[in-house]
Figure (cartoon, helix red, strand yellow):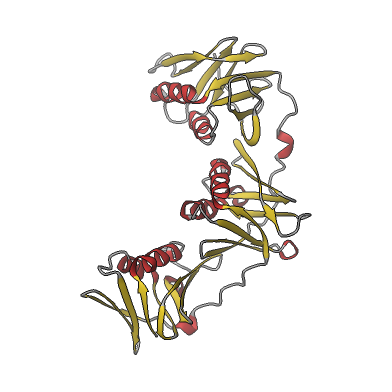
Length: 374
């Protein structure tokens, strides 16, 4: 193989493709990145038996070929290439890399040992990159951080015609975002449980100026593909029954309060400074005021009041401050509406553009309050 590539394009492609390579993969060959060069294109791929990354860039291919080299080492080298162009050429069992006056020699890995990558499923539909990235960011708020129950580390994606709903829950809170997209089949109805961490990683790397293509076969629901700007990821789906969460949203809440989101976040930050690990922030809602407080009588204490517009009776509710802050930060709107039934039942938070406007139900955040004693 002998190829010349643009150094920055090569570095970007190598770094994106190899970021899924594990420190200790199941097989030594999976430490490698596979490179195929032919017909003016360089294809790169990495695989860990559950997830694949594939990328392609333009290249001047003097001699086509297929090689496998250590992925993380190649990523480190590619980030530090000094010249605009880089040449890669095989010499026996080694890959020679030349960029400007820099020279590198890497041992080739046996490409015959590299496993065959799964076939990308057929296209299910498309959505613009910015919408998809933002939806993943909001949905991922409630993904479980520990994997004792793998299903809780997933984001449930539900496809119904031109609407997609993403839902996640760690049992203590729930995030749900709905957005429009363009399906291949206008009557599509399908579900997929996708690793939340993978979706978040993909969202961070997205070219939001280009569409995202979702690849999925509802009749063979084991694999999902996500394509954007020449990059293709596939992932095995998480099996199991996702919790029945839709019924947790109530049609009516007797107590509702509208607050300025930034004022609430600022007050939460200050009051939480005295909150010990795993402690709560208490929120006392009255007709025109919210008073936040934290700390016990024999510890440091803090309280702060902000303006509130309450519809319903006075109520005091306690929350995990981290969960409340993370949820509030996921909203775009300047105001939030907090909807409650009583001090122990799940609380819904929605965003709204004006203090006196209706709330938006595109993104809904549900939290379970914490029991507390006065």
